[in-house]
Image 1: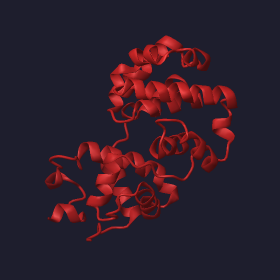
Image 2: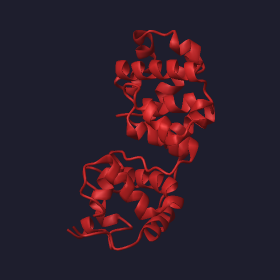
Image 3: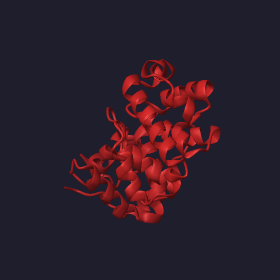
Image 4: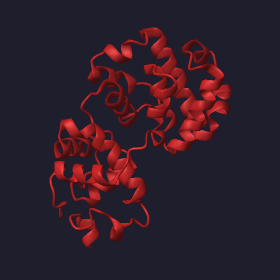
Length: 223
């Protein structure tokens, strides 16, 4: 397997030079500008599952308008009521169940628990809530706790393979490979830059290889 012809720091610098991280394109960033509570930001990450950030942000705004992300109000909503509010984000019943169960969890533990609990133990507990998996937990831990994880979405998985960094299908393998490639200090921003890169250049269909600023070092652009 041919590997990208640069180290992680060099690739990071090229990404940072050519791409802009637009906060309005990332639902947790938008959510934090509206309500900085850990619970509300985790809800925004759930809403972003399997949809565009644009639709997730619309759903979040709808939910905020109706509830102000008040945990007690959300706990008292039915799945049907919450589904109608967040429908634009897709998978409304699945996400509603996750959000209500999360609200119960936070109501029981206290919201500071999300900020104070050991990150790995918190991740394990969050993943016991239906609909919250590794990526959702990792985005929260990276974004709000500054914990050294590398969330892997479809963009990042695709790019890591095209760069020849891994051919693994394992979430953990891909995540660890990227942390090792970029290093812990760069991983947080590298994650956002890779998503921006996947949206603008390294698309699933019709990637813009001929125009790409990495074309001289990317093995996939040489094919």
